[in-house]
Image (cartoon, rainbow, N blue to C red; front, side, top):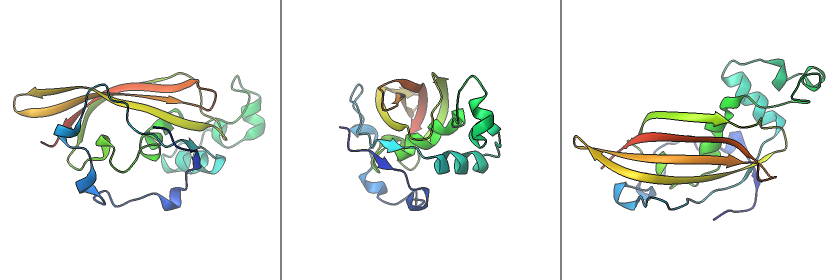
Length: 164
């Protein structure tokens, strides 16, 4: 289910990882193939620049409009790794990737096109499969991020070790 787009407010972001932990999806709640709820998020220049500063990437493509316009991108863009922020900004508090005890075991990401100030990003995320190996539980998942034009900006697949 997709809700109306909201501007992401980094100051209002929930930093208490354990808040509502008992409402998050556990192993038995994961249904392979089921599309998970997404909250569209409008990305502002402030969000892009705060993120870039936080990761120590001061590339002028994120800060200098005149320079960015002179490049093949034709304007300001976001750092490619900003999709990590979207994973949490676009999902609800009960999203299975937020379950305490979940460990990221690996991931592959493909950047299809840059994110720009003013883009509204939505996520199509789903658990693809559940696996038990050597007594540990794993979820294989994929995530596809699209902009307001329904263009894929980033897609990825990963494995997480899950609490049982």
